[in-house]
Image (cartoon, rainbow over all chains, first blue to last red; front, top):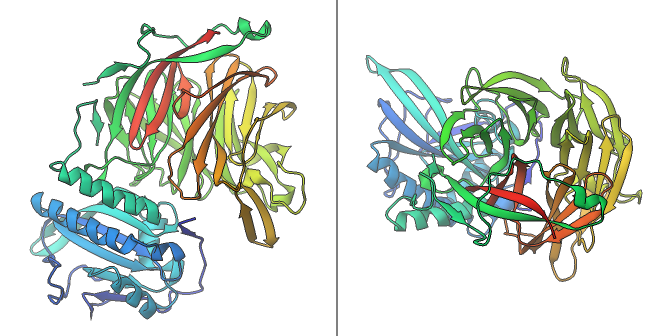
Length: 206
Length: 347
């Protein structure tokens, strides 16, 4: 069993912490973003900016054995690397989001550090974590299991320099450590073969 | 564009209408399933990588509907593998399903999708090659649902009520208010300290419209059963040579599972109807406990729908999600749908 399943209800969203680039940026603010330039490998997105963002939301938990599965950290890093390159090529901003469904927010933050740099981090609150609610339960419902990667294309429109419209489109999910690792391997393979699967044997549905 | 490859060169392509004589069953003659041609449609997702989670595939009229489990969207394809439309799962007119696992055709141009996350049935109509959401019914009295099918205007769901030890397996759903109209079929497994294996893994449910019966198979239990729509058990059939993983409740809420010593274990992975009068049960054998491991073998048992007698056992049939109109809908390779024309022949 490589997934941690369940929905442990808590009475309140106590302990919810949003840390953006290691700095406090206010609760779920999408207007002000304080990026840290300390992580040299990360291309910090400039916000607010009109256009399309490609988000990779990694939902993890230090309470979950599968989130510590050997090879998972490396797989998440490889996926970030490839999809960041793809996003840049396609004229999109790449945003990596780490969500830790830990009971204790700081424990979650510490756990997420194992996976490298994120552009946004959301930790604490267990299964009532705001990221879990948004990406697993309510807004983009999916299988309630971690570890999970959720891929989102986000169209941002500005009006007079402020955000007027934000539309999210779910592009995919990978649920379970083994599926994430297989995806990292397949992604690397497909990009070694010049970036795209061939249609030689039949149509490809996208 | 679609490339069709002849799988068995000795067989000429035949557009099988799906109605195959089963006279051989009555006289005791064995029948075999012969696959003819395969048409491929790869489903790609993020980064152009194949989508692993193609949860189900069915045929509605002359359109193939695939349940893509990474975005929980429904793809409508032509029989040569072209994408005609995609019904998103999110948004104002979407079903917002959490974990859709099985579809079932309803009548001529509708289908239901069973959501296992928070048990629900979403009903769609096929109109001009795209799907329109008609309704979403919450199955509030059920939990652990694993299969659904429709028969005679009724939808049946395989799942449990609470407490599980008093559960019935099959539930006829009242379409007006999503309540359970009636339930039948006791749980598998006789030992009281052994959690009924039907509740572990995905039980499969198949409705046979012509024969007016429901066929259920548990993923982890070596038995197939057939009921009529009123809940009368018509027959049960043990699957020979089945190597299950057994579960034992150590304490309440905690289970220990025991694998065969050599690590090779079986699961009933599919039940489908290749022809009137016949059902096919597929048993996949895996090595070890790693999820997603490909099957080392897939054994397909052809059973008489009338009495469950074994008609034939084959090893050359791909992993099939469903069958209809002379085609098998297969997800044999990761991210790849195969539409395989076939026929049933006397041996």
